[in-house]
Image (cartoon, rainbow, N blue to C red; front, side, top):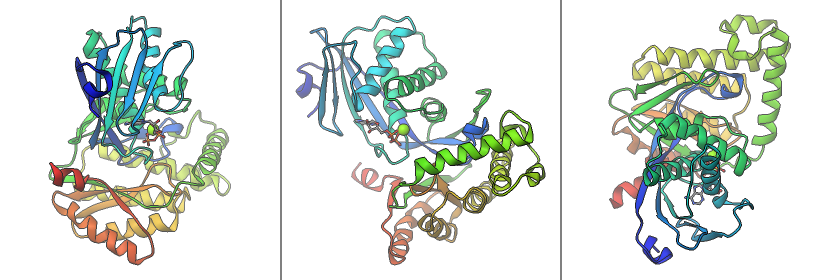
Length: 359
Ligand code: ADP
Ligand code: MG
C-alpha cells in the first residue's frame, strides 16, 4: 500500500536518512570518549502531507500499522512514539507544526543494532524541515532526534546514532567526541567497503552486562580521581586498579587511543589492525564478547580482502563489522557457510545483497 492508498492523497514531500554502524570506539561513549560510526546503505524514507482532519496519521509500511493520534496530550507507544516525539520536540523548540500524514518505509533492519530508530527520527525531522522550510541545521536535527528518543520513546540513548544518521554517509565516517561534540567527517579509506554480519545470537545478557560495565567504569574513574575514563590517556595508569577494573579501564583507554589514531589518518591495513585490536580488547579486557562473535570475527579476519573485523554494538551477541577491500564483500556468503559448519546461523545485514540484486 502506498501513500495514496493509505491517505487518499498524494505526498507533498519526502526525505531519507540512513542507519549506521560503529566502526571503532565501543563502550567509549558513556566514558565521555570517542566514536567512529559510518552510515550504511539502507535508509528510511518518510513521506508527508498535511492532514485535514486535525489529527496526525502515521503509517509504517514495514509494520503495516496505522496509528491515528486524536489526543495530542497523550503520547502514543510503539513506532508512533518516535514520530510523535519529533513533532512534539519541534513544538517545544518554538515551531508551529500542523497535523500531518506520515508514511514510513525502511530498508534498515529494525532492532538489529543498525539504528533504525535514529534513521526514523532523522528522516522524519528532515521531511518536516523541508515541508515547513524550518531553519534547522543537521547537528540540530541530530539533537532534536535524540531528545525525541529519550523523552518520547523512553530510550536513554547517547547522541552517536542520531549524529551518524544526520551527518555521515556511506563514503564518510563521523569522528565524534562525545564530551565536547567536536566532530570531523573523514573519508572511508579508499577502495574499501563495510560488511556487517549478524551473529544470530540474541543479546540476552546485554542490558545487565551493559549496566555492570558502566558501573565498573564509573568506579574506575572515581578511583583514578578523574571525571571520566576519557581523561586517562596512558594505559599504564590503569595498572594500579584492582581486578577487573584495571582491564575494564584499559579497554576504554586503549579504545579511545585507537579512534584518535584513525583521526590522524591511517591506511586501510592499519585501520583493520585497530579493529582487530578492538575486538581482542572487548573480548579479553572488557569481556563483552561471546563464543559465536569470536568465531565469526576470526573467520572474517582470516578472509582474503578483509582488513579487520570486530564485534559492534554493546556485545553479548548481535553483529560483527568488517572493513574489506572493495569487491571482497562477496566473500561474506562463504564466511556464512563456514559459520554454519561451526553450528551457527548468521545473516548478512550490510551490504544488502537482496536489494542490490533486485535493483
Ligand atoms: P535499532 O535502532 O537498533 O534498529 P531500536 O530498538 O533502537 O533498534 O529501534 C527499533 C524501533 O524503532 C522499532 O521497534 C520501532 O518502534 C521503531 N522503528 C524503526 N524503524 C521503523 C519503521 N520503518 N517502521 C516502524 N517502526 C520503526
Ligand atoms: Mg536504536
